[in-house]
Image 1 (cartoon, helix red, strand yellow):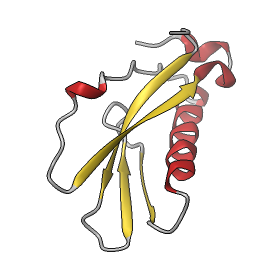
Image 2 (image 1 turned 135 degrees about the vertical axis):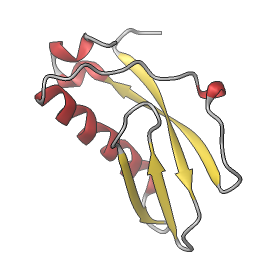
Image 3 (image 1 turned 90 degrees about the vertical axis):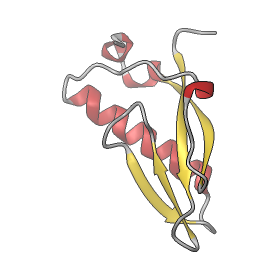
Length: 97
């Protein structure tokens, strides 16, 4: 796989009727919530991009994503892989830990 692309697992929670909660287990603080009738995938990607951009602006290193098969789910959760091109964030984003 190209070293510029990472695939982060996003957990989707459905405990609030009509809403979906989003958590990226590899990125503490990278969370969100939207209505189910919203474009959920676009919202998930935007949440990830915003969070990674903020980390880079703050000089933080981007953690490597966990393999999706290692993520444990609760009964009211689903998981989706979110592929991101980290080169769009500039050269400093390549310093993954």
